[in-house]
Length: 215
Image (cartoon, rainbow, N blue to C red):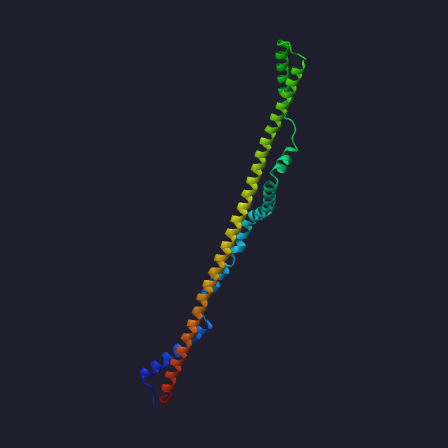
């Protein structure tokens, strides 16, 4: 028995659905967008890592030094101060200031008839001691100030290293999250295509078998 136009249309539609399902299942003529996106997303960590590397390296190198300095300060602050003061040397103007002070004290002692007396000598000794102490503490003040700047520098490097590490870790996490999302969506699309294929296959086979007796 010859097929009518409607029958031919139904058979053609079933075959078309069947072929469309096959194309969707096996990916003929298309690509998974997740695969394309992941090619670029996966490059982000390696592409940005060189820009963070100097800060990461500086932060990692400064952290042990910073920990050691803090440990010394907390455990033995007096020892740290003595260590800083161990390199003390008198300032360039100390001798001039000392000579000026002794000369002035000598003039006063001479004017009072005390020149060369034990009191005059005691006064000179106290004057020299006070000037030496002042010179030493001026040195300590400058040295501890520089030491504090050094600690701040180490803290800055350590903080920059931490920020660089955190930023790079965030980028890697975001990259992996995006890859996971795209992978999930891509697999969901494939599953949907397979389900559609099975449905189309059933429809196509049903239409074909229904019209076979009339061919």
